[in-house]
Length: 427
Image 1: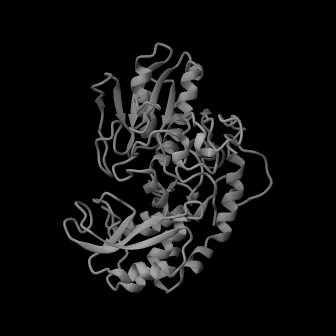
Image 2 (image 1 turned 90 degrees about the horizontal axis):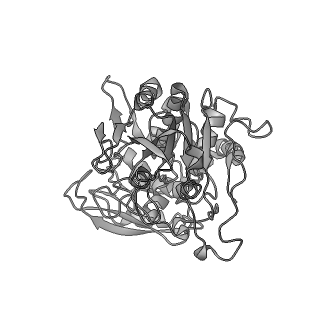
Image 3 (image 1 turned 45 degrees about the vertical axis):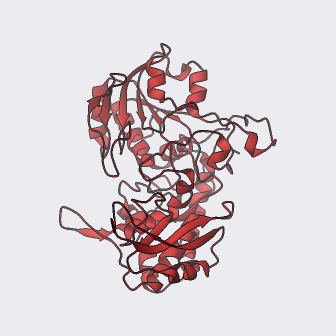
């Protein structure tokens, strides 16, 4: 399987490609005084502290959403708009919109922002020359990206970043990526890689299902490994963040990156339990614990018992009953599990997601993979796009256990980890 246009399969050797990582700033705490006392400064904080030196003389457009906030929860667009040191002339809104008024699969459209009067351009589902034309029409010189990611390949904001980088190169614009923490930490990468024939907006390129990188590191990886021609790229790294830091260590406020990502704890499990979007089970949308509550009509305590018997590290599954207010089984009381992470250092979200799929199919004869039908009459299984190939689905259908399924991606994940290592910027 080809993992990259620039030899991602060659997991060792070679030179550092364009966009590769440089050393990160020293930790703001000055050493090992304790994670709980460390203060993380985001890329925006460091850019602002510099007087926006990196943007001097440029007309600037910002790709952002409600997560683009300062420590005192002011939006960076509102902050930059009233600061004479930077010329902010446009905003670009991704899925859910710049101010976050749209649900999954929606955006806010082209409009003028009521608070600032700035033109807001809709980028959702735009790519290539079409997106490049939006950047050209906006009149900006530099496109700044500042969105909180959650660490999973199928969370669409990293592919908004990828598409913006490709379009900025076509339009002759520069990209500046402002970094924020990965709430799953950056300790490692987990899960299968995407195969090219399954590429969609929930996965453009072959990175791991849980990539263990920040957005700035991903931007450098994209530039060095995947873009046919690299864009002019600058990244502003954080200070005071380490690879094994969970989000609560940062001291930063949590703003939901999307309506069904209410807490950092949601982000911790999402890379595994989002796979239930590819089934007929509810993934907890319409509850107060999306992606932590999973269930369906007819499921009962047998599922939690079977999942707990797997001995999945760092997690316990509780028998649970709930009634989603929207989405699958809306208004119906259904049975299932609640995911309780009791040791987040040991927790593996992807293995947990696979274990839950394996046991759900074994204990419930109503289990069905979701078939995604397209306007042209073709269809495919949505879980194949989430996992990156047919392998997980077909192995589970054939009766494979959790360990066997997880072992199936060992070699490709090892190759990705080796290449990923060249772009990591933090201790």
